[in-house]
Each structure stands twice: as C-alpha cells, then as structure tokens.
Image 1: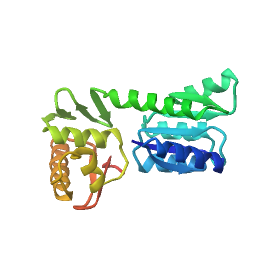
Image 2: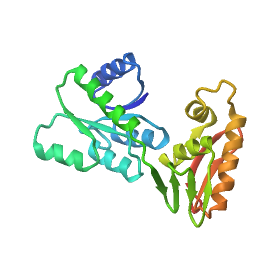
Image 3: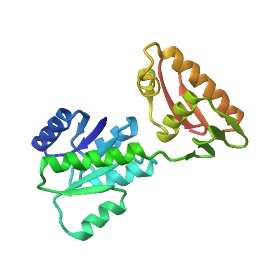
Length: 224
C-alpha cells in the first residue's frame, strides 16, 4: 500500500516515514501542503497522513484542494490543536480522521490501518465523471447510450474514473490490473486502452484517454 506523508518537521517526517516503511507501506514524504497537493494530483495513494500547520500551504487548505479534484483518498490529519472547533474544521474540510500531537506511533499505525481497510473494502457500485457513468454491478458504461464492458475493461475503467487527471504509466496499470498475470505487458495495456477509447466514443462521452502506445495514460476531458 502507498501512503503520502506531509509533515514539515523534518525529524518527525523522517521518523514517521521510517516507521511506515518498516510496517510495509510505500511512502512518499513531503514538507508542505503545496507539495502534498501536487503529489496527490499525480499519484494514487491508499492513505494520506497530513499535518495541519505547514508552510507554503497549510493542511486544511491542501485538503480542500485535494477534495476539490474529486480525490477521495482517506486522510488522517495530524494537529497540535486540541480545540473541538479545530477538529470540526478539519473534518468539514474532508478529513476522515485526526490525531492530536503528541501521539503514540502505534496509534498512528492503527489509524492508518483502519483508514486503508475501510477504503479498500468499499467499492462504489456506480462511478460518474462528467457525463459518463460506470455501473460496476451491470458492467455497463453509459452516456448518451450504453455499452457493455469485459472484466478487465471494467477494472481499467474503474481505475481511470476513480482517478481522473492522474497519469498512469503502462507499468503501473499492469501492476494494478494484471498483477497475477506474469505475461502481461505494455502491449496488453495498449490493447485495452484502445478498446476503452472506442467504447467512450461509442457512448458519446465527454472524456478521453490520452497517451501513446508503451507510455502513460490519463482520463481527461475532451474540452481540456
């Protein structure tokens, strides 16, 4: 699992990064809210751990920016503030949980585990981006009309629609969609991307999948 850690205290950042890594997480660490927003825009995470009081952009502002991009990655806020109103502000901004400093490292790990468990066991039955709807139960892609999707098409479309504007390399897609297939490669990814491009056009979608064969791909608006 991959975690984004945003904490401006360098020593604490190093300790938390080491602890999360030792616990089996892949960690990207940054030192301010602006960097957190940029990383969240360009990567997919299973959880975000973010301090509220940071330079350049504070955690609350960064969280609001992340949520404005339809990114629903679970977020744990770290705060030195104990006032109830401050906690409410964080939760209202889109945080899933908060932890007041100082805290026990074991408790932070438990909170992260709880967040990732809830996130990974809940799959929305219907995803909507702009004028396109993906019904996971019926394996159907809909816009002006509807079309059926094969199993891997569903999984790939779900990945892209859950993370619009996020760029995925062919390797990342293979690891996420074909992790149990040793023969899967960039050519297989390209084949399925081509299938989905044709189906998006067939339903009259306002979305497109950008990218070239063997490279990276991104679901974005045709109007961008």
